Structures are given as structure tokens and as C-alpha cells.
Image 1 (cartoon, helix red, strand yellow):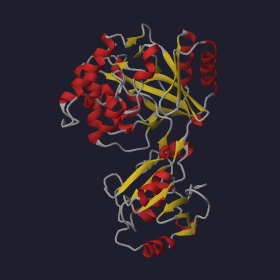
Image 2 (cartoon, helix red, strand yellow):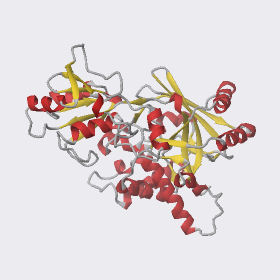
Image 3 (cartoon, rainbow, N blue to C red):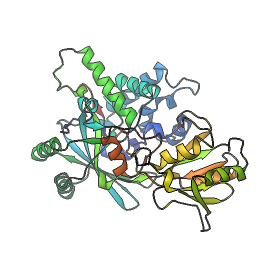
Image 4 (cartoon, rainbow, N blue to C red):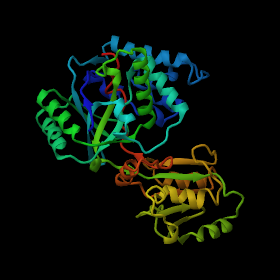
Length: 415
């Protein structure tokens, strides 16, 4: 069963929602965030990346950064920019990109279900990244960034959400600077809230689409609160964390591409010869960049684009090993380019599909990188199958768009 719980969101007043809403803290650098908030004192980046309001020399993990985040959040509440709903509610968050919409249910999910694997993972987390968000959540006593969860398509859930959207007026309706349309509704009818809780109790699993570090951190803060209050009942707010749940058939995973700084001492001719042992290679003669059209195909850019197709004998049957990101790692990145751990190797970088394949070509043309690989996107079916098998995807396997905005819903761990 999947437990969902309504909550009293702290959220921006309608006329400030567009100004408050901010991209997730982990998709930009501190300098990029400083540029993004110029002229906008309401941006939630002042909370999620509070170092932007301190001297540039400060360590990102200095206690002052977390204290500044708390101060900024409290000021937004005191100044009336953020308000708290009087009753526990569910919310609907609809994002539309390029004419395609995805409709999310904003709710709280259970830390216990994360631990018992009702909420399933497909990525490993890093202790240093967890530690940062643990301190952030702990200091603010709130979940500020929503976890992006998915569930298998359910017609009953869809009917309730569409009914609310049809009969109620959206409380927020704006287009962000990247062209994404954001609309939010409140689910206030108790019968709808009760029915949604009942429906999700019949849904066996939820899946983390994006936000593994935020999820792990929220759970660990919840357990820290339990240690501080050994007589807890399980009903306290700290037993739950902020999530947005989407039907799997509405989600869009983009390609997550790779660029490498050198050819590991090989000439271009030697490099191509080694790749031909495992892949069929043909020069890409069409106009523009090479975008793979099916699984086990890869675009590769050196001085020009090539289309690589994995030979059948190198394609494993195992669900993780057969992923395109796994094949590229096992057959090219590690044996030919000597990139053993792509999470830590400084010679490789990753480019989300939202930036376009031209960004790959540009990195090679300007000499920053030597070779680029364009990927066929991982599917939601693959992601869920890996999670169901209790296995882990290679790093940087999925890039979800559009990104959920932070600051539109805050979950107070005490109230």
C-alpha cells in the first residue's frame, strides 16, 4: 500500500507565486543562482541556496548558510509573502511543456514506506550531498523541495484530479522564464481527500523519479526527530515528507548525454578501430546532430557525427546491464577511455537533454572536450523495472523535464 497524507502547506500568496517559484537547488551553481535572483528578492533560491546572500568566499556547508536560509524563510512568512493553509489539504500541480502536460498530486508520503521499499529507488546517493540537505531540512524544520514520485497509471486518481481542475479555479497560473506553464489547484473537498487516500492504499508501490538525495535526507531528519521524541505516535508531521506524485504515462524522460575530455592517448583512427570491435559505425550524413532513434544506438561526435549501433552479441539480457548507459560504460568508457567511475572521474561530464545536442557538438568544437555521445532516453518502463528488481541504475541515467519548482509548497515538520 502507498500511504499519502494531506498537510497544511506554507505557500506563497497568489500575486507572488511566480516570483517565489525557483528551479531545484541542485541544477545550478551558486554563481548561476546569484545571476538568476538579480532583481527578485522573493526567489526561493534565497532559501534553497542561501549562500547567494553571503560573501562569495563562504564555504557552502558553513553553519551560517543554513542559518541564513532559516532567516530568509522566516522573513518571507513574517512579511506575508508566504502563508499557511488552515486545514490539511492535497494540491494539484500541473506543468505543461511544449503542449504536453503532466498532472501531479502534492501530498506527504511516509518515511517508513521509503525504508520498507514501498517507495522504490533506482539510484545510489552520496553521503556528502545527503548531509547538506539533512542540515537544511533540520535547520528550517521543514521540507522545502518536493520529491518527484511516480505511480502506475490509475484511472480513479485521474478522474478525481480532472474533476477538481474542471470545477475549481487554479490558485496559481503562470509561465516561468523557461516557458513552462505552472498551474495549481487546492483539493478542499473531504470526500475527494478521503477517496484519494483510499485509492493509494491499493497502489502497491511508488517510484522515485527524481530527488533521491532530497528523499533520503528527509527520511533521515524524520528518524532524527523520532530519536528526539521516543514517545512519538507515528502521526507527527516529521514522519512524513513533501512529495508530488505523477502518473507514469504522463512523464517525459530526456536523454542524458556524455562528453569526455580526451581519447586516453589514442589517435582518432585508433579510437574508431577499437569501437568497431563492438559497434557498427556509419558516418551520420543527415543535416544536424545525430539523435539515436532506438535503444542500443548512440550518436558520437568527434570531428563529425557518427551513428553507433551495438552488435547483438554485446547486448546483455540483464535489465540493468542492457541499459544503454550501461552498454556505453562497459564497452567504451571503461575499456577504451579508462573511465572507471563516472561519478568521480574528472574527465567525463554530463549534459542534460534540455540543453540540446548542439551543446555537445560545441564542447568538442571549442576544444573543451574531445568526444561526445548522444543517448537514447531511458524509459519509465525501464526505470520502474529496475526499481521493482531492487537494482540500481548507473549514475546519470535519467533527466526529467520539466523540473518541479521549489517554494510553491513547504511542509512544516512540526505543524
